[in-house]
Amino acid sequence: MDACFTAFDKDCDGYLNLSEFECICRALFRNDRGRVYSLSDEQVKDVFEIFDLDKDGKISRDEFTYCWNNWIKTIVRPVSAFLVIDVQNDFISGSLSISQCAAQQNGLDVIQPINRLLDTVNFDAVFYSLDWHPSDHVSFIDNLCYRKVHPSSAVTAEEAQTYDTVTFDGPHLMNQRLWPRHCVQESWGAELHKDLKVVDNSTKIYKGTNPDVDSYSVFWDNKKLTQTTLSDQLAQKGATDIYVCGLAYDVCVGATAVDALSIGYRTILIDDCCRGVDLNDIERTKKSVIKNHGVIVNTEEVKAMVEGRDRRPELGYKLAVELKRKLEMGDDGITEPAITNHISLSEEEVAA
Ligand SMILES: [Zn+2]
Image 1 (tube, rainbow, N blue to C red):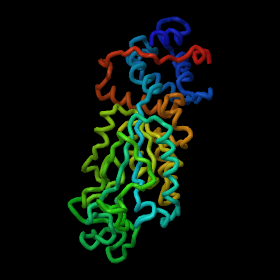
Image 2 (cartoon, helix red, strand yellow):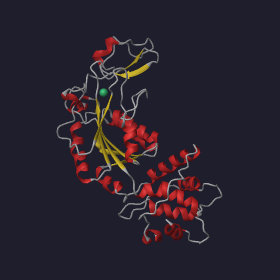
Image 3 (tube, rainbow, N blue to C red):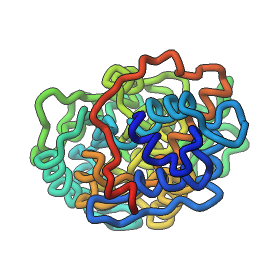
Image 4 (tube, rainbow, N blue to C red):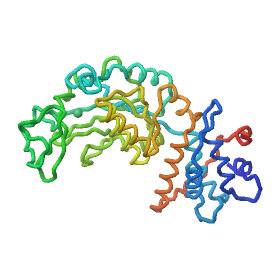
């Protein structure tokens, strides 16, 4: 860390100024084929100001220690979690086969690229989520008769068709899209597809188990009443980066990616490992991920990113914003022991 500070402190005044910090960003955000990704001037300035903890316009050695431990180390050595969402029979060839939906995509298409990633990329943790509904689940259109639709509902109970959204009555009104009966617990339709590779030491996360509330995100049910075990397990692994893929792109995958970003994870959506329901909604999902500093990639880009050889500025910016949020909440992380390790930015990178 000291060597890095000294190397970038070009004018040797014992501080990093904005242009010296910009050189660090240029060394950090690049891939292993030498491509340099640029942060906008405004973003470099934002990040610089976050690490200029005492706001004196320069980064001291102490401030750089914080920056190194909390930012640079994660960027260079991320801890990755691979989250494979709902690759279950019902979504592929069963009762809610997405091939029957508007976008007419084939859920089977995700299996080969996901298996290839599992074979070739050394993720720090792997999770498989399963939509796992009780028989009386609120999202099944054939259960509509068991609950009261509110008079304000855009679609009445009598008119409602599959894929429509109704508003259910209750202490709190709840909008619910109606789906065919699917992924009933212990049924064939709820099983992971037989061709999907399930790796050792992976974890299965079950969602949608409450009969009265649906759950698109693997983190939370749609009303944020109950959390799955995912957050705790990610924290246990010390995960920094979440790679999200599976079915359906614009429903459970999208909701999970957006939740991961809102919780504060550096989030990567793997486009060619996702298939969805509606093309417009898929576009909306992508826009929302990008807007929140997530990244959308294809499978061939994943390995280098997981290994810290391809370092994206969007994810660096996202992490800096999260650190700022923590600092503002008074959790400054400065007490964390400074660990000297082998991370270094090479001379060649310094020169670039
Ligand atoms: Zn479901």
